[in-house]
Image 1 (cartoon, rainbow, N blue to C red):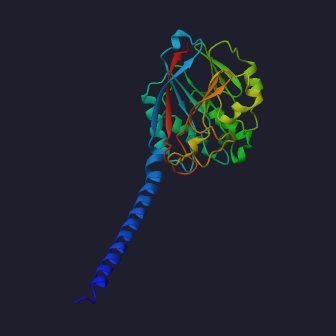
Image 2 (cartoon, rainbow, N blue to C red):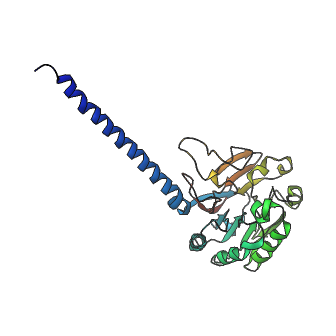
Image 3 (cartoon, helix red, strand yellow):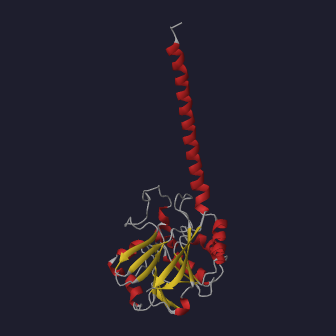
Length: 295
């Protein structure tokens, strides 16, 4: 009668422990699969419209309250789904922007083979009343970012859509100076030339694809806001940790707003496209700025 109670009690405990382990293991595998599916199929195309004010000193009254939309890093090519990108252009148009700026990396390609597709995608963007302006990113120069002819052809084709690409030059838009720099990693970056044309006492907005450029000595004359892209926010950001992969020297420059001192503020758009179809905690972004007069 007293020979087996301990043994009889021990077996169910072991069996229960194994069941729990199997359940936990199955839950972990299922959770990992769900996260993987989310990062691959959902978040890369889950566009967030970020709405915020953009205060600019001495902003002309006709521009106060107007909407400026920033797009960045479309990466049209074999990896990014063109139907998704076309839908993003239509979504941008639905915001009724007064002006649109594109801060580089229209495509991912070795040469000019994706330019036709870039034009097809962007033909779905309704031209805004104050125009669509752009700058180039490193990928717009083709393989290893070394082919000016690829960039030149892209610029010419964008012009057929009414998109004006600023290459180290300034354009006046209803009294606002829009300064557009060529890409930092490309062969034509020239901040000194760009800034020599600017009256820094007037209202100014600078477009610069790679945010690392703002730390350079030749960038010091710049004042006001700088709109950038390039980082994609790292594409994946673990909770409470910085993104592990960023294509910048200054690891501070992830996404969003940064005070970079000396009268300059930086905004980094997370981009619409991707180099690999994966995003986690870093949704693609369309930024809708409301222009305001800085006090």
